[in-house]
Amino acid sequence: MSFAQTVLLGALAGFTIYLGLPVGRLQLLSTRARVALAMFSVGVLAFIFVDVLSNGLAIIDDTLTAVKSHHQSAGYLIWLVVLLGLGFAAGSAGLAMIERVMRPLSARTPPIAGGSDAAALSVPDAEALALDASRRRALRTGLTIAAAIGVHNFAEGLAIGVSARSGAISLATVLIIGFALHNATEGFGIVGPLGDVKPSWRWLGVAGLIGGGPTFLGSIVGYGVTSHPLELVFYAAAGGAILYVIGEVWNGMRRYGHRELGLLMVTAGFLVGIITDLVVAYGGG
Image 1 (cartoon, rainbow, N blue to C red):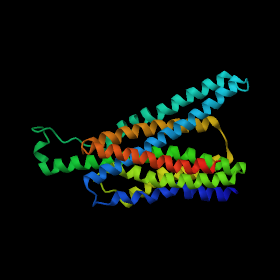
Image 2: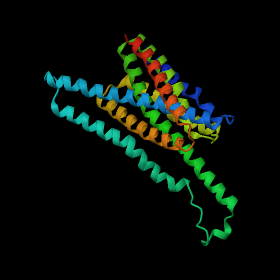
Image 3: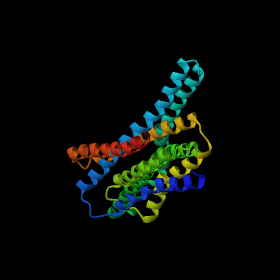
Image 4: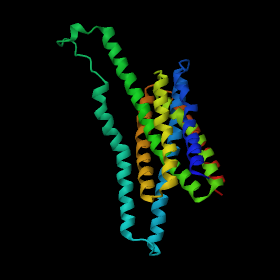
């Protein structure tokens, strides 16, 4: 498979994420339906969390086997474990710190009653500010999810590029199909937590580019460069970021109720992730 074909198909696999994003503009969904959509996305994210960490741990397990057979040094194994921890911390705690820095820039606190600005701020104005802050937080959470998914998709792109470069055409093709199916469901994962916030088409375009674009970039990098430490860092960062996002979405949906429905939809999303992954595994022989 040529470089141009690999890049083209990598882009196709990545940008199927746009198939699920337009759902975020539907305003006819009930609270129950929105909870179901958000928790379905949590299920998909939960599977991706398991998937990326299992791939990362596989690299460490392979290195451990090489160390036992004296084909690799123990120092290299320790270095990979350190990279795993640093990547996971960057994806989880790193995102939390970034959000903390961003929050004062996107949210304003209404003056306390009786304060110097209280007379200038009416009740409708205060409510508008609160709604604006809530909207900004929801959109920021959606972009955070897109970024976490993007890190994961970069690793998927690496797999596509490496397979195509090595001449495993059938495997690369099935990877592209499987990852395209994954990315189509990941679009729901981005817009599910928005609740009743209606994103603009521009926001959806940016979110899709952040979430799906890395598959395209990863296929380019994977075609030319193969690095287990690089793959491990991205797997670990993706795992940490996804875990952070799952917590954010879960906390945000608790206030709407429908607990049993939400848990069922988590299961449904997880199963969809497993089914699409089986396509990739079956093609890999």
